[in-house]
Image (cartoon, rainbow, N blue to C red; front, side, top):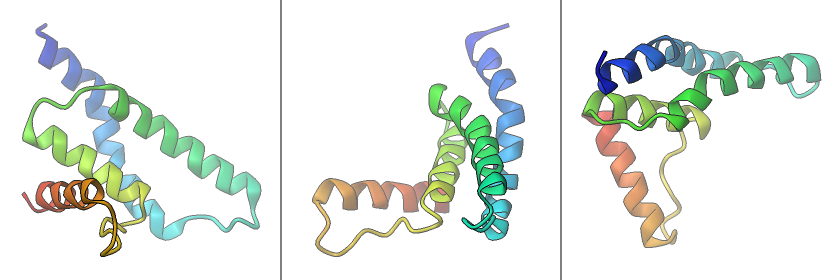
Length: 100
């Protein structure tokens, strides 16, 4: 099995769960229920850590990471107008990836 094939085999189940996380953000438990909140974030970490640890080498893989980032920031990818240039460039890249 080639290196890209191994990477895809490792990440495929996690990519499938990413859409679950995006849906879950709307059902995020209340901070008043610490056990439910802890379980929610434990599940999120289990999905996101392999994505973070594995390099993306295709546009589709980059889109998956962009979606993960959007979930992590609850959809708020637009920086403040006076944000540093590097932050604005990063936000621009995220917009482009998410639109591609």
